Amino acid sequence: MSKKASGILIHPTSFFGPYGCGDLGDGAYKFVDWLKKAGQKILQVLPLGPTGFGDSPYQSFSAFAGTPYIISFDKLIEKGLLTKEDLKNYPKFEPKRVDYYGIYINNFKILKIAFENFKKQKETKEYKDFIKENSHWLDDYALFMAIKDSKNGASWDAWEEDLRLRKNLNNVSDEIKNSANFYKFIQFEFFEQWVALKKYAEKQGIEIVGDAPIFVSYDSADVWANQSLFYLDKNGKPEIVAGVPPDYFSATGQLWGNPHYKWAEMKKDDYAWWKKRIGHLLQFVDCVRVDHFRGFEAYWEVKYGEATAINGKWVKAPGMDFFKSLKKEYGDKLQDIVIAEDLGIITKEVNELKNTYKLPGMKIFEFAPFGKGKFTDDNGVEKDNTKHPYLPDNYEENCVAYPGTHDNDTLYGWFYALDSIKQKEVLDYLKITDKKDLNWAVIEKLLNSKAKWVVFTIQDVFGLPSDCRMNTPGTCGIHNWSWRITKEMLTDDIAEKLLKFTKKADRI
Image (tube, rainbow, N blue to C red; front, side, top):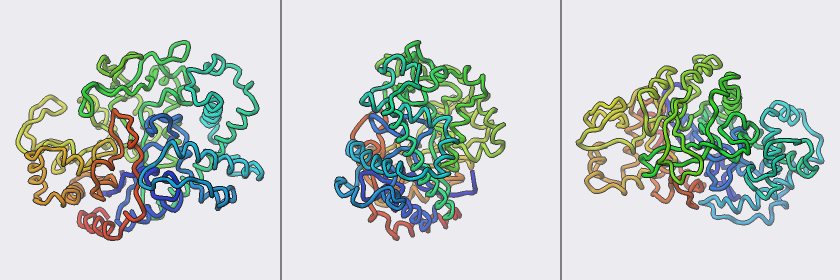
């Protein structure tokens, strides 16, 4: 991690803009400008992959590809691949929400127009280099998506055996081959636009923190193209799947359904697939938050077909050996490029793994207990609430502190869900009496903590209510992942206030 700093968590789909989804056009650059004005040094995003059913960025068709939804049409117009006339019938969408169905129907039509215009041009050296350098994942991903389209979006386990088990793939139709080239074109445009934004952010002194879900989606090019690396039966169906036992978010646990890795198989080539994945992601971001870090030490295994995650078991994973291999790859930089999402059921073994490689963990203000009482720490020792590690007064330096994450309610949503006694305990801890001061009191408290980095969801900087939260875990609601800012929200007043608190905390 670089020197003491703070920043904002916002997914690119939440940027403002004229189309149905936030994109890498003017809204993205204006947001970076606003970050700089507010004295922020970090832009944290969620996984950038293409999404399917449920629209979750944590269930992507690829761990390597970028989502087509955030490709800027305006940037394609600048390149001569689209005209304003091509967009004249594009629908007017609600600016405060992403309409995923609407953009699925409409955006691909526009991108296909751009592709047809692209095919009329001479291939550039940049395009040829991109195709060559990314062939290790791009060829499989593009073919996977092209076949999926030809099957009306059906999951790959429903394809006929030759395609499902990757026999005679050279015999696919010309139509599928052309469709695969379309998906390669999309990835090139995503790559160009994202790298341009990253370079712009670097010039403004802003680092980008990305996100790597530990598990990949079953219906993905990753699993389809690497079936020997996952616990699948002879027909390609999962044998065991991922989740977590009952926890803070759900009484029945969370059944994610991702297939588990065959870690012993991955070890044979020194975790080459993982190294390629991380190396690829680091082209787009400066640092990676590894989601569900504890899964590298032990993972919750559930038999495929179970209705909930209750009937599972913990299985040991090769975390120490895996990170030892990464350490050889990245040296001391490892602790600067990985953030361990160490939330949930954490054991001393998980902490040992994190601490051995000096990886910063996460601290969540909303998870802290307030008022009198006792808690039991990760080592089973009972302690007074005032010693709780999620209280800002107790933060260690090597951590990233958040009021809440994309999976938590907004600060005000969380606060108003507490009973009146708990609300008073929170206000007393913050030494304020007016609830209207809550979000800024928490922001100031975290900024003045020892935490090396502090990151706020943009909703908490704006002081927004519960209906603006990004995601509610364990649900598949229409509001998940869809919230957007508007241009009017990025006021100078809020930027100046955040700058004032950030300067006072010596994080500039």
